[in-house]
Image 1 (cartoon, rainbow, N blue to C red):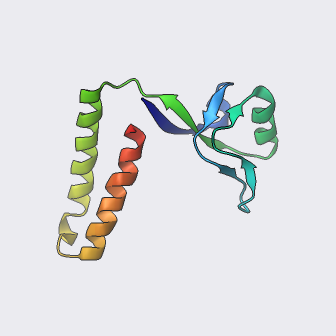
Image 2: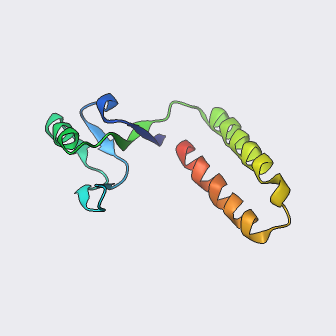
Length: 106
């Protein structure tokens, strides 16, 4: 199973795959999702002062570890939203946060 990691450009290994489109600070496309990061492409990104990128990596957790981690995430988010249990908008936002936080496990 693969996961998305956001890591410093200097920690990226050649051959890593971009997990998301890479945009500059003005919203212009630098590289598309799925691009294989070669030494030349990494150098070009450094010249453009890119500091962090999202790459795909193998997730080495088994199914039980993933489920345990997912439950921990849900528990922490639930605790943060406890005082908003009667607020429909905050409950919808909580669901978005849980889904977003769970992305790292997919």
